[in-house]
Length: 99
Image (tube, rainbow, N blue to C red; front, top):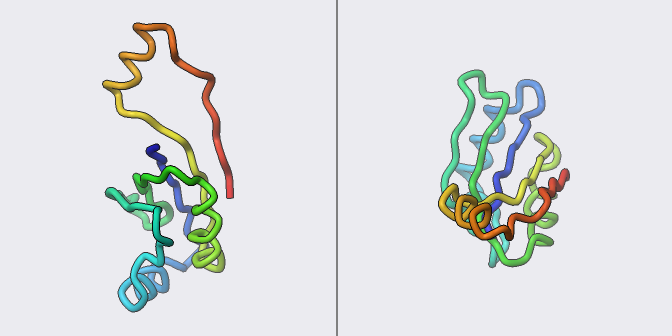
């Protein structure tokens, strides 16, 4: 399943976040896949598209970064899948996970 992760950087933490990422990598547990990301122009938030079949893996990953920010984790689907689900009447209610 796909997830949009919104990472909210603590004030002034962007430099440390990028330093740690250079030194330690993303620190993803096996089974949690990074797809792509975008950072806002002020370095306050990072929007990360991730994939996993085990959402409990987010607990492990966010713990490694919890001193530098907090996370909103939102299950998402592609627009094509959304259109198909709406058309066939199988669109479930939305869910939001906040860590």
